[in-house]
Amino acid sequence: MTDFSALIPAAWEVRDLAYAPYSKFHVGAALLGSDGVIYRGCNVENLSFGLTICAERNAVASAVAAGCRSFSALVVVADTREPISPCGACRQVMAEFGDFPVLMVTKEISEETSIRALLPRARTGILDSA
Image (cartoon, rainbow, N blue to C red):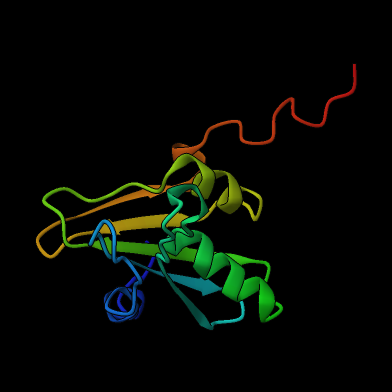
C-alpha cells in the first residue's frame, strides 16, 4: 500500500497558490519522484481556457525540469464534494511515465486509483506501424 501521508499536505499547500481568476477552481497536485523528492503543481488558468495548465501536468513538468522521469505516486486535491479525476490530457501525460498510484482527495473523502485504471491501453497501438 502506498504511503500518501507526505503528499496530501504538499498538494493542499500548493493548491493555495493556484492561479484561477476565471473559474475560481483551485487544484493542487503532489507527485512523488522515484528520487524521493515531492514535485508540486497547481493549475494556472489563462483567459483562453485551452491554454490553462492543470495541476497534474504542472507537477510532471516540474519533475522533468528537475531531471526526474520516474514516479511513485500522485495526489490531486480540490475543495469539491467528490474527488476530482485528472482530465484526459493529464492522464495521457502521466501515462507517458508509467503506471503509479493516484489518490484523489477532498477535505472529506479520498479515492485511490492508478494511471492504468484511469487510461487503459495508453500506449497500445499508437506506435504500431501499418
